[in-house]
Amino acid sequence: MKKAQNVVLWTFMLSCLGTFVVLCGCGGGGDGSDSAAVDSPDPPGTPNPPGTPNPPPPGDPTWTARAPSVINAAALPGPVDQHYCSGGRRIVRIRDTVLALTPDMSGERTYRSSDGVSWEEIDANLAFSGSLISGPGDYVYHFFHSGESVRMVKYRYQDDPPDPVAIYSNPNVSPTATGVYRSVNAIVDSAGSLYVAAHWGSPDQMVLLRSDDEGASWSGPFPLSSGPGPWYYPHLELTSDDVLVCVYDRFTQPTMMFARSLDRGESWTRTVLNDQDSIRNGSILTVGSSDLFVFAQSTLSGIQGLVFNHSSDGGNTWDGWSLIDPTCGYADPSPALGSDGTLYVAYRSSNGTGVTAAGCGNQTRERVAMSADGGLSWTFPDNHYDAERVGTRSQMRYQTWFNYGGPLEWIWMQYEGGGAQHRTYYDVNDGVEIRNLQ
Image (cartoon, rainbow, N blue to C red; front, top):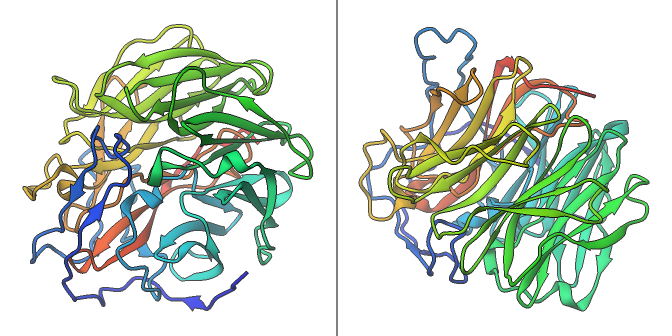
């Protein structure tokens, strides 16, 4: 493993304006379209990276604004494909240390910071769209696809990462019909058991791997999806009573599925949340034992933009999709739960940016939504409309178990210099504590 140099922070250095064209991989709707799409560069003259924190809205004293920091400021990540920030959880905190994953042209890298301002690269040359979670005993787990294997890097948060080990290997892991949309997602339950959702095959099927001994051995793969694929974009979570839930999409003939397991991932019941090419790229948040929220992006007439669906009975029934923010159709949301029950969602929005560049992706900027009443009403306390466009999915730091508490934090891929560099940014609200069950 390559262990790298100290990386210093927040910079406005890049002024070079480049142009580039990014192809969205295989046809399929991971970026909101059901066919291969081309994202053109932001027009010359768009602002440089965000440098001024936005003031809190009137009547919202809980929001502590600050200028975000560049995690990989000293690196030259290049115009890495915007989908390579689309993996599952990608930021953890244990005590005063934050770790995050960042993509660049040569693969995924891991950075660590003790203050959220200066960052040190501690691991490199790993595969794109991995998942980073925290577990019991101050351990960090990084999971990713590589060749014919699903691999893991496990280490205590203050130590140097070791070489990755394969937790499952099979020639069928290599074939995939989802191109740049292939990703993994991971979660941990109250007993410390690890769960990893992955997809592979021809076409891709969704599977689950489980470890009950902190990654020393693994059972599975257990079938998570059912029916014709390819399936992709898994997002796992657990309720407060350890019911395992997941949302995922079908790549062609688009369908969003909700799946629930009462036997720790060995068998699943499945519910269709959407069967049109209109709502996709979901992420799930649990509140207690029975309240479930699924956040997604919609191109459906009347609710185009950031949407959510809610169940109050553990996923047996659903209220239906409601609009949060009327964007151009992209959102790629990531939620978190405050200690007081407030819902937070980081996502990309075109609403209010004033940008009319060609293509929905080029109009989108980083934004945060919040609701203190269970989704009945929403405010938007933070955005970076002064910056260039962003990549696909943001990542808020949250998992039901073993998240180690601390402030609300999130990361996203930020375009710079007209798209010459796609760096990863970190933001935090020290005035908000996330819910911590253990």
